[in-house]
Length: 280
Image (tube, rainbow, N blue to C red; front, side, top):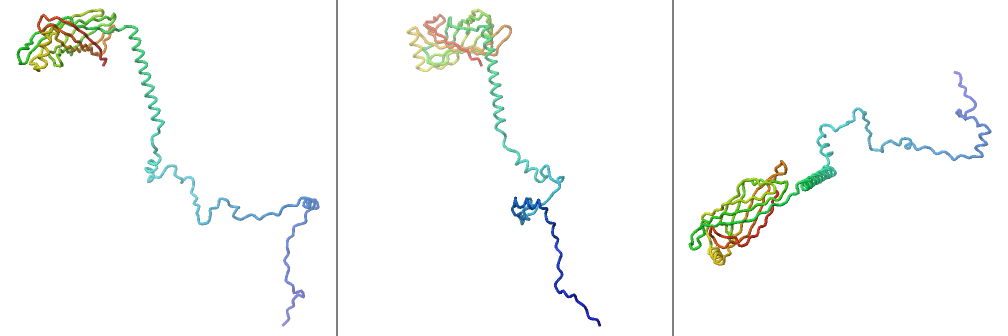
């Protein structure tokens, strides 16, 4: 059996190592003049800045599977949460529009009233009591009385371009010491411009109970020749402006007068009338 022959050199085989070729002399001179700082090894974690921290997961979903609207099971909740309180600016805008409309309406109304006043020059009519005829007063008896008055009313319309229609629903009442003695109404008629109309209206009372104080005051007034009465007249009228009639306007006349006796031949001693108008 032949013996095996081993190499004389027992040293382990040496590994060949690749060495880069030496740089040219110019680069060696540049390195000698401009020494470079030693390069740092890059942190392996710094190479992936978007990598999540340990213990978390990243789920990637295709774009076509991302919901653009909430799923049906969350639609009502999304609508409730997304519905905010009504904006205050909307309310302020509505209020500004309303105030602007109101101001414009009032301006137009005032302008129309001014034009009408300048065109027609309206004047207030005046009223007075011309004559009073009285009957039915029996002050010697303690029973109820049924007085009657015939009152002559003078109505003057001083307007040059306005006529007056006296409508139904008027009332004329006579009071003595707060007690209504008789009631009646004016006739329905038309009063032309620049016209004076005299109207006689009949007023009647039935079953009027007089207290002892009122009866005594009337008897005392008769003895002195100054029996006081109050007359209240309310008449709905319409004004005629050219060919146009206005809405109903209520004329109010309140008169205080005294008569010398409670008979048909009574004479008015003193009288004072106040009158006004209710436009609505």
